[in-house]
Image (cartoon, rainbow, N blue to C red; front, top):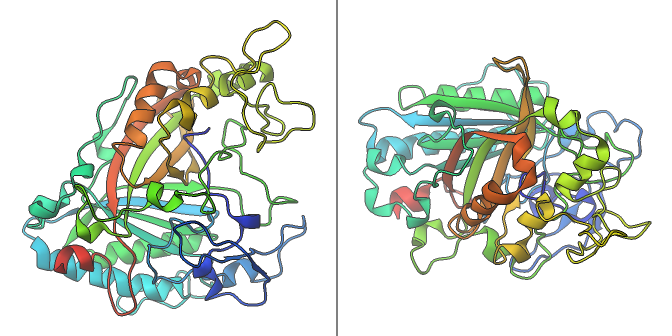
Length: 423
């Protein structure tokens, strides 16, 4: 799905400069993206069809410190733990600062493959870093509770209600949000448990979701991943090499953006259940017309033989019957940036499968994650249009939602949210 998609694409799916600092023995690739200073890509273990060398995935490290938080630009990992916390009554600014300092110390050690100093249950003691990233955001409700109401960004206004939403408030929102990615499920779960224990008495877990993507090296070649509908998912994600990329994803001071958000981003989370029983009952050619792409290779409908997923979409192309090759309500047509005033988001979604729903259908779908500089000009207008005219909406149900200000990156010697609590 163009707006419910997988990881950002990097040259050969390599690491950004963050990973370069902690991984040795791989070749350097050129990859300085416009507005992303000095970005350098580094390969993951080669996807040759054979199993990666023992420990190769476990040794991959993504440093905690940087201009932006890890887990935004870095290649998507195989596993994710998402969670939100609510502050305890009376915590205030000092309590929030103390919690973020504890989380920062723990995240720095865990992402280096070291045990947490204060609390560690040794669950991941024999594992390496496994590309672990810890990304933290704050919800709109945090600011009043922490005595920071005057610092709440205008862009953090609640998302509007969209047609077809069936949201469960208990599974969304929250004062604090964490995205924990890793190439090993145990490493991700361990990191979340450490953060939860460090938050005891200060913040309580509100909700938690686990997701997965393709394991690096599982495919014979580097390809865009597929979602649970079987569609190649993530083709049109903006790329760091594109002009204006940083301005689409990261915040800069000015207008109504507060200075403390410089280098931060806004994250929209949506838990989107896929109505797989209905979808799988459609013939493949019908599925392709709903999406607007061939299922086999991701090429847009109407593209010539030999085209692939990165072939530009010709929205004016017509078939032999003179009908539009990409139907009027096809997902890629309705979601196209050209049809949405250029609105763009960096999407980093994961699949989930949590057994059966109450009606016996699969409780499965997409944990949609989209980073952007301003949701008022990114997610909100695009989702309004999709909810009204996207043929794919008949097979999706938005069941949980959240909007968070992703904190700026952490300089050496600093801590998460220092710009917010001390600025």
